[in-house]
Length: 449
Image (cartoon, helix red, strand yellow):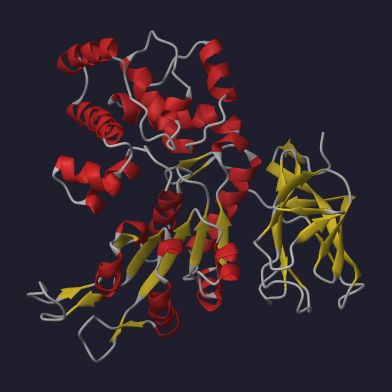
């Protein structure tokens, strides 16, 4: 059992969640004697004032390293710092440790020391927040944060691996906020062609560029009195980031081709599966924009770190997957054990794909090999014999929506396979726009983005 082990105690009034504390102590360097005692699940160390532990040293990068508590110990990640993070003679990129370690950051020696004290972490008694479900301490801690954040009109940055449910979290924040009656507008920054990002984000006037025959409001105006969700914010071109910063600071936008700004009343929630602190260090993302977006930061755990939530997730998804309201899955112990052991590289999105497969072939064991990994774009969804079974099942039992979704996913997998994963070529062969194909690929979890 690692020094970071979490303890959950339940009494008549609900749940109490404890996390072991740890200390970060500066042993040498300009900040010698400085320390931080915390039980936070994640902290960053660097010279920027936004770090949990700020070091006043020119040899330390703005965001130098991150320390994160995991079920197996402390995960130490160097954030592409200039002078590196050193453990003895080894320069670290990422390491997992359980006991005390001394780390060298430029001219600073930093000690990470697990402590014996525990700190109570506020969690919710319930196991759901809107459409989100989970009974693990990590998710119930997240629900407690969401309950508080939803009522506040603050900017939120959500990070997490692909498939962890970032858009659903953003949507539930909107649904539980005073802006719930207003629009919820989604912008996928990673799916917009670079040449069109500015006009797609901020709108344009007639004649602003070739093909702009009429004026169009951008998503910030469309989200008036509501919420705008900027997905994959790490893909926003550097040259447009100052304009988004202006929206955050002054609550106004300027359409392409206009000479005046328009006031907007909108809440901004952004999400990324990239490490923005690392991008700030490399110069690919503006530090001032990062700080304005991360007024409140939320990290979504991967499914492999909350296996105890599988039964709730399956029960929550199953009626929608099989098209029968109130339906509950009936898995044998062997199948449940197999699902629990699986590392779920595609997270909750992959789980849904597996459940769809099980709903079609209930008597076959779930296929949890690499074909369910969204990183493999060439993986076929079904064998030929399975396809003939699908044809019969579609005619006999499957709802139209589910049949269409399964056909679409199989078609996309084959399309990508035939074009060696080249999305531009695949789009040309399919006769659709490349951006639209990217959206379909993401929708069906066929590729890590």
